[in-house]
Amino acid sequence: MSLLKKIDSIQKNFKAELASSIGDSDKINDLHNKYLSRKGILSTLFSELADANSKDKPILGQKINSLRKDIQDQLNSLDSNQISKESSNIDLSLPGDYFAEGNIHPITKVIDDISNIFKNIGFSIFSGNEVEDDFYNFEALNIPKHHPARDMQDTYYLKNDKLLRTHTSASQIHFMEENEPPIKIISPGRVYRNEDISVRSYCLFHQIEGLYVDKNVSFSDLKGVMEYFSKEYFGKDVKVRFRPSYFPFTEPSAEMDIYWGLNSESDYRITKGTGWLEILGCGMVDPEVFKNVKYDSNLTGYAFGIGIERIAMLKYGITDIRLLYEGDIRFLRQF
Image 1 (cartoon, rainbow, N blue to C red):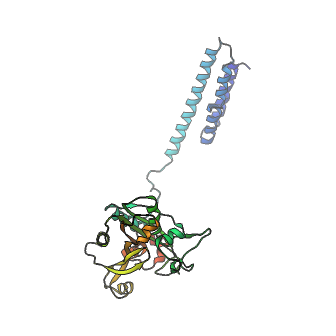
Image 2: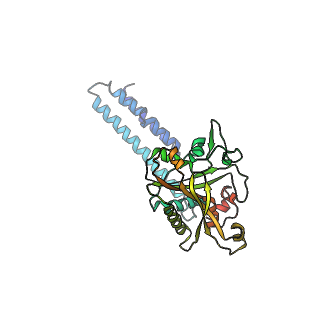
Image 3: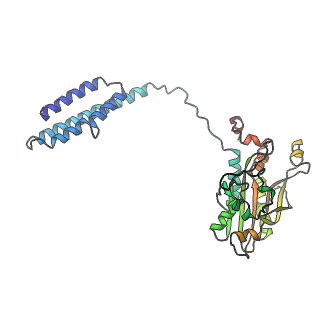
């Protein structure tokens, strides 16, 4: 068959196939692929044109181009009509579909709010590892071998001498190993303890670790920053107090309480009848910790750790910590 007759035959076949495809978008798409794709029928015609007689090439090329344009126009016209027909079947007076909006989880919100307070005074955010080894979680933080925290009853141990971190304090060791002072960071994240699940305790919770290292850092600096945080988060009228405490990686160490009040039966229960509630632990970084990361002995610094769940429960009046992890939509929609 000559190329000219082949062009006429393809044109007739296309018209017949097109007539049987009207109203069917899948068939129209198949026609497009069959005739106009890179390996389609028209591409084959152009390949055959290369072997045609040089005198006939201009006429044949013109006919092939005309056929391609005709096929493109007809297919595009059918596509437009199909879309128009489908659009005309839409009742614009009907109400739209409802898509439920998600809410920020209270734990995430508390972390974001607290992080922003510390970022405003120059702290940067560092993310640590949830899977640690003994050195970063215990030894580098001056926690001795006989310390109860190392016991399997308190810590989740994994294979290959790994464990789930029991505090975000491990993050400060990683950061100090990789960075020279001055250092001013906070490190939010999940931590894990092998505890019985109850109204007040859970096997995982969240902390924000804070660390500031430089020359001539004092306990007064620490108190000033902690009081600033308390007033920014709980309000300018909040009362705070510091009590002596003990942490292996800080010396001296303290716990900071806020005065929650005794205005209800719940307040008596939460504060054990004192009106005061502990919200964080803090202290001056122990020189042994600096020694473990090969820092100069002339440096000083402070560290603090804030329990996020306790803050969230206080702020939102949550009485059962388990509600924060059950994924109950009815509960989460309240925030």
